Amino acid sequence: MTDMLSPANANPGTDAIVLTGGSAWGMDVGVGAMHWLEDHKDVDIPIVPGAVIYDIGRGGDDTARPTADWGYRVMDAAEDGPVRQGTVGAGTGALTGNGTLKGGVGTASVVLDDGTVVGALVVVNALGSTVNPKDCTLYGAELGLGQEFAGLRKLSPAECRPLEGTSPARNTTIAVVATSASMENAAATRMAAAAQDGLARAINPAHTLHDGDTVFAVATGTGRRLATNDPDDVPALARIGAAAADTLSRAVAHAMLAATSARQYESYESYCDTYPSACANLQRHRAGRGGA
Image 1 (cartoon, one colour):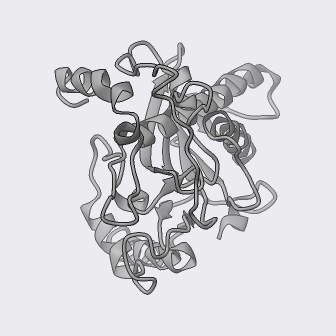
Image 2: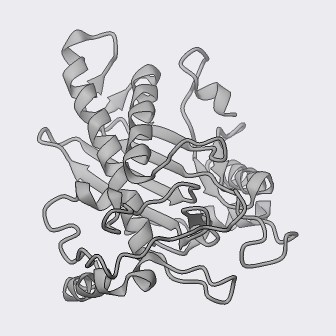
């Protein structure tokens, strides 16, 4: 169904986008979402593209797979408000750095000077590492806005120990970037391409032969209409693309910070449990803001 999203094809828009785990088996979740839309939104043929991460067997039996019923129930339970991050949903079995650290779900957003909103939701399950080996900081946190990552602390050289992965190559980082601007399909496609650079800034190496990195772009259409064939719109489109890349990088960092260790399953450690002094002030900072 992703071929339908190409600017070269007729595209009526999407009714939902599914990010899930379960490798190819996870695509059943999208079928469940389609049935929900048929039942509740009177859509004859729902357009529900999706992507999955390769996480079969992480924390369970190889035959434990998502089903269409999961997708139906998730649509039924969907609501507005903050998105849960870390080791939840599609991020439950996510790993990074060749299995060295837990990955997970992360989100971030920004409001541009003209009021345009750009947001990102990512499931980080990368072969590459999100951690800079020189100082053990998170690549994505370097792009933080204001006090976003104010509680993070750089480690001393003695604390910064290298991580060696042993996990089989089962990877893919998947994401959705969205903007409040109104865009035709070509402009949204360009935003998705720009956002891929955000993965490369937050994960090293990115886009390897063992990764199936996929980014969907969505324009909600509530703001100014922008088109790639209008020279006056090009600067605004460039700003949105750059913001999508930076926002996706920040979302990767949030996924890593929110992830929790899964020691019952092959001792998958989170970033904050691996480098506790880096996150000690961050946890207090978050607690002081009501867990935000």
